[in-house]
Image: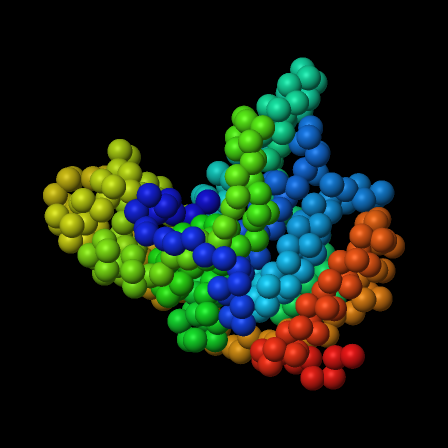
Length: 344
């Protein structure tokens, strides 16, 4: 998903304490797919409650968000709205990949290939309406702000950062840069330890910060040219130009200046409306609104929702709520702007 700019853009590792007091807008759909993919049993089965409803996303949201609040990171989650029409092909491609991965997962399970089953299962994750709504419900009980975007969540997050209503957007994808976010944080919601693929080895994972001005300066290009690079190598709204990877795209932009000039010089055949794709990034559908402050969490609702409705371990949830309450009290004492004036 998204545009593969990782090999081009400069970034720097940071620590969570460097984000203390900063407001970060998180791409909710991106994070939910992340949790659905990674929080699974060894055979690839997601976590479920007694009614068979998936709860992997709730586990990730609850405990990882608590960790962020404990580090005094002020988070808000932005949810996607209606996707642009040009995204229909990408959505269909993703559906096919999920279906194929599901078949591979079940086949590997039958054949006893547990590691292969787990790998295939990760790509079979589907973001249903129930998963989206239950995520919003949990976040509201935790006192975490929710923003509903009219269209692309990353576009809305980028707009809010550009308007100085948040310090950075957060996503694993690089599209936020194409939408013009001055800053992008990756790995914010990942576990702090990651297992290397195919090995019983774990590595430490830190957030990384990507600054748009630094990207443009070091690559010596404009924002419009960065968008053209994204279009050359493929976005959610168009297929890539065959044989053109990130480094080649940068060289072409340096030599010819723009997508249109590259197409003319190289006689590339394209089957999409370049101007429409480009306009999605330059003038996305967004709304100008304030980001709500953190609000008082509701412990009773959290216990009812997680333990009684979704069968979470009550002792663990209550410990999590205690951590959340302590983190909120710490925030209030630090003077960071929240709506916790009457807290406790």
